[in-house]
Length: 119
Image (cartoon, rainbow, N blue to C red; front, top):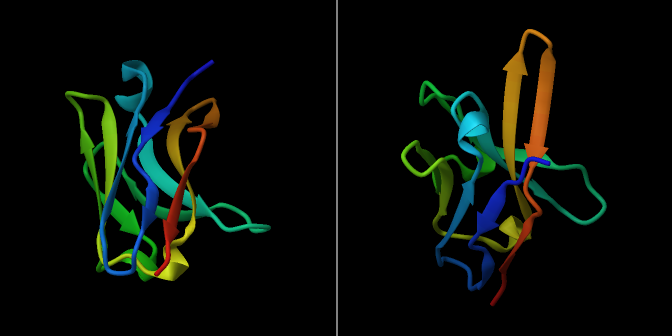
C-alpha cells in the first residue's frame, strides 16, 4: 500500500493564502509526475497543477497566476502554494503521484484535504 501523506488545507477568507504539502515514498517520488487535483461535490477530480521530474510544470488556467507548485527532492515532497484564494477554489484537494512506465500508468492518491474559502 503506497501512502501519500498530505498536510495543509483549512478555512480561509478570500485573498488569503494556504500551503499544501504531500510526501511520497522515495522510490515513487523519484520517478513520478507529482500533482494536485481538486474535486467539487458531485464532480470528477480535475488537475490543478503538476510537476515533472524535469521541473516542467502544468497549471489549470484558473490558478495559473495564483498558485505555484514545486517539488523538494530532499524531502520527497510536492508543495502547492496557493495565493489570492477565491471562493471557487473551495474543494477537496488530492495529492497525486503518477508513474509512467513501459508496463502502463499507475496513479497513487492521497486521502484528500479540504480547502474552504469563504468570507
